[in-house]
Amino acid sequence: MTMTSERLSGAPAREVSKRVSQSVFDGSPLRVVLLVDVYDGAQQQFLEAYEQLCNQVASVPGHVSDQLCQSIENPSQWLITSEWESAPPFLTWVNSEEHVRMVEPLHSCVRDTRSLRFHIVRETGGASAAGRAGRRRLQAHPRIGDGVIRHALTFTVKPGSEDAVAEILSDYASPDARVDATTRLCRTSLFMHGNRVVRAIEVRGDLLAALRHVARQPAVRAVEEAINPYLEQDRDLNDPESARVFFTRAALPAVHHVRAEEQPEGVRQALLYPARPDGGMRLAELLAQVDARAAEEPGGAVLRSTVFQRDDVVVRLVDVREGRDVEALPRGAGEAAELEGLLVGEAARMDLITDRRSPEV
Image (tube, rainbow, N blue to C red):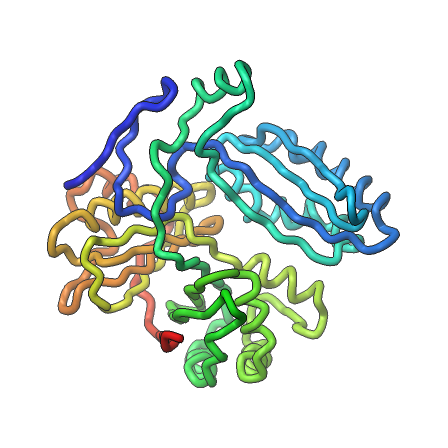
């Protein structure tokens, strides 16, 4: 097993697999950048809503600081930056119902937003910054990815409608893979277990542009309208606020991705882990550790693995070697007992509904 361990600026040494290309579990501090486009004339309303939000965020565990900036060229453009002790507490908060309620006052004055999240890798700025860096874990090396952004959506349908929903979701015309000169769709995989649906997408380029591109496609829109009557959470795609709230709650972010040295195609599988309240992030971290080790094994079953997590929903999307399989819960691994303790039900294999790759362009 090829592992590296380095000590930076007095921070505790930590083993990190070189094959992990994406992870929120580094322990590094997090910088969040939110680009905001405010309606003309609504700047004062936005400022007041932000100040109320800022006071609430200050008490969220893991929050360090934030800044609000206004463009010197366009008064409608604002920038919010915040720092967090690490990624997990931020993700726990931003994916919570508390956050959905907290940002409601901003909706009436904001035209558009774009959120970017970054681990802090290096710090400069004099003695105070150097001292702060000495007390914090920073990444020893930049992660080397494959240029693919991974994201998922999840939602539930009314019990008894599963077969009808599966048929609708499996029968649609794939959208044009080319979004623009720099963005293209690579793959869409859709799974179901019981009444839960998980749609995982892979994109090269701009994820937000790709999601908007897909949403505008007539065939995709027809499918979304067809499943509307079966959804447990009502939505109206003709109402921007209704659609925004639905897709905010449906977002299932990728928190870890690892790949083996060999890159054959493999067979795609998905496993669903129902976590106990407040246990989803830790469960996702343990699964990430399991797959990071598995990807280091020469000739092992795991070729690629992505762990998605939001609240108590954890999904493990794994590409396995042809003719091989992965266990939902690893036997004998150090994490096995803790993993079982974090579940409120049994881990389950999800049924594949469709898996579509876009041709290379």
